[in-house]
Each structure stands twice: as C-alpha cells, then as structure tokens.
Amino acid sequence: MEKIERKSISSNILEQIDRIEQSSNKKVVISSDYKDHRTLTLDQASHEIKADEIDVVVTNEVYRDFVLAHELYHVEIELSDGPKIYNAVTSGHNDVDGRIISTANSLQETLEHALIVKKQTEDGTYTHDIKMKYLEGIGEALDPGVEIDPANMRFFRTLLIFDAMVFGEHTKDYSLKEEYPTSFKYAKKLSDVLDDNDLTSNFQSRRALIRLLEDYNDVIISNGFEGMHYHEFLNITPVISERQLRLTLNQVYQIKHSNFADRRYNEKAFVLLGINDGQSVASLDIDPNKVDPEFYQKYYQQTVKETFESNDVHYLIR
View 1 (spheres, helix red, strand yellow):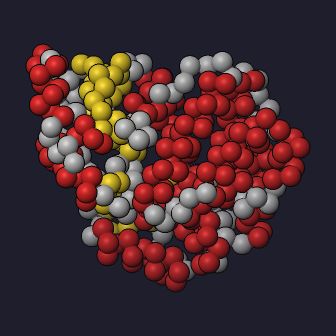
View 2 (cartoon, rainbow, N blue to C red; view 1 turned 90 degrees about the vertical axis):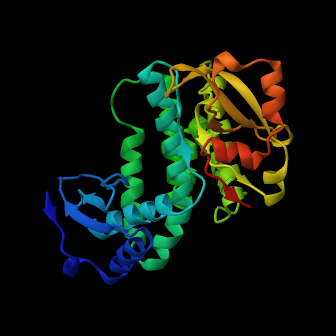
C-alpha cells in the first residue's frame, strides 16, 4: 500500500478529513491499494478506526474521489452519536451469527446511503456518469453467473436492489422490476420505509432501522426459512425521552431470558426489550442463579435511567 498525500486530494474531501479529525481527535491516514476493477462498487474503499488514527484504504484509482468521499461519509456517520447496532449474544454457531450480523449491517448501510447520496450529489463527487457506472456494477452483481439456491439468490438480490433503488435514486427501478419482480417487490417495501421517515432524526432513523430488520425478516420467513431473530440478537441504541428515563423499568421495557447466550458469561442472556417495538437495547448483567419472581419484581422497580447506568447502556435523548 502507498500513502496518498494531502496535496493530491481535492479540497472538498480535505474539508471532510478536517471535520473528522476535529470531531474525533484522530488523524486520518489515506492509503491506496489499487486493483484492476472492471466495475464500480461501493466497497472499493474501506476504513478502520483505531485508538489515535483512522485508516482509509482506496482500491479504485479511476473513481478514487468518489469512493474516498463515500467512505469518509460512512466514517462521519459511524463517529456521530446516532443509533448503532451492537451484538452481545451468540447462537453458538459462527455461520449463523455471521449471517445475522452481515444482513443487518447491509440494511443499516443502505439506510446510511439514503443520507450519503444527497451529500455526494451536493459536493459533486456523485455525478450522473458515476451513477450509471455504479448501476452497471449492480447489474453485473445481480447476475453473477454461478449456481446459487433460488431462495438465497432472491434474498441476495433483494439487498442489492434495495441499495440500487436508494443510492441509484430510483434511476433503474423500471428495468429492475421487469427483470427481478419478486426481489424488486421486497426491496420496494424496504425503500418505502426510508421514504416514510426523516433519517436526520435519531428517533425516526432508529424506527426505520428496526422496521427494515422486521421487513427483511418477513421476506426470509415467507420463503420458508427460519427468521433471523434480529429483535433479540441485536441491540440497537435506545432513543428515549427524559420522562421515560424517570419511569420504572416495567413501564418501558421487559426482560426476556433469551435462547441466545451472552458472550461474556456463556449463559443464556437476559435481554432488555422495548415494550412498544420489541427491540433489544441491551444484554443485562444478571446472575441467573439469583433470578426468581421476587428478583424480577425488585428489578422492574428501578428507573430506566438506573438500569441503563448499572448496565453501561448508551442511550440518546429524543
């Protein structure tokens, strides 16, 4: 890899880097590891946030500014204090855990794309020509030319088409619907979720993310497969009001003894689920040997704020 010097980077991207460095107090290091890419995809830059620096690697030389700016916007979102996905439990099977996490991350990434596409259009790093090149890459990915189980291909195409609808700004919707009607139908439902929410609002962004997970889970179940159990497997940063923080725990959340194991203790996890949306916000630090009806009764009388603080749960205020 070769370091990319600041003098060769455009001014609008330097502004991004300066914003990130000022807000994170970390140095941004940009490197190249150029490959001979036939198509343009959104994974041709990657990043790693370390203790004192943020390393960004670009692999597409022809569209360097586009993929670099795109990756830096993802960095900005990751560093911002918005709703995040966490995982504290395991099914005991790495392949199952990986599938749940990867699909959830894909859905969250496309949600971020709904914000990033507007920023890249405004700063000039996303042009009509680049959009057409990106959609050309989507077209090739949708038809990889290998034998894959039809249902799994349908799931894969749903995620790709969802991203193409959002980041491609619906440019190819008609042809995608004609060629892949079932996956398009699923992806359209996901896209509508983003259209129905203000993603600059933490509360609505979180609500949209939970809805995406629910709707994609429904796709899997409707095709005869076991669901992903996103609600229990993933924790999503809670976004609540000051009033809710003062309420007793039983008024806002319920504790469930999950079938998933807590990674810290290798015991079945006690997950904290929102009463309104059923989504886990934490895996609680509870000794299973001390749990009885009296324990629950006492635990539920804590305030939400006390519970969050005793379990190191990060939360956002509405």
